[in-house]
Length: 145
Ligand SMILES: [Zn+2]
Ligand SMILES: [Zn+2]
Image (cartoon, rainbow, N blue to C red):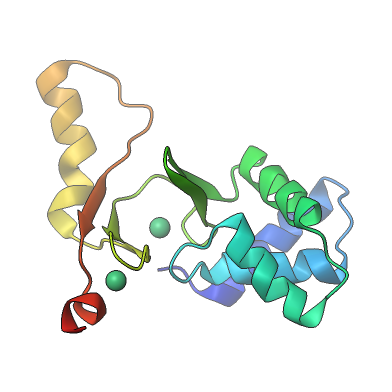
């Protein structure tokens, strides 16, 4: 996991380079995405930003997240039957572990998985341009219930 402050500074610099305004609400969204604890959905980001900025609209959060996604500063994890989730801490493809009960998503730091794209490329002749690897399970907290 990248350092939260480092990611925050990187995202701020990228937005400034492109001449985007950094409102306090937008800064709050960036801060949440920089840590991306449990990979929040837009709705979850909205709930957290609303605590400090009650006037914030869901549309504002969507706009900021979409902008960052287009800039490649946030990774979007799409789900057909659930809200999309976001990772601004590691904005590039990486394996995830998803709890089917509480819907928490964590990064999967397993060394052997990092070689997988290369193995796939070598064995198939494909040039791998992206990847999506999700593991589904029941987290220790949910198992304890
Ligand atoms: Zn769980
Ligand atoms: Zn992630």
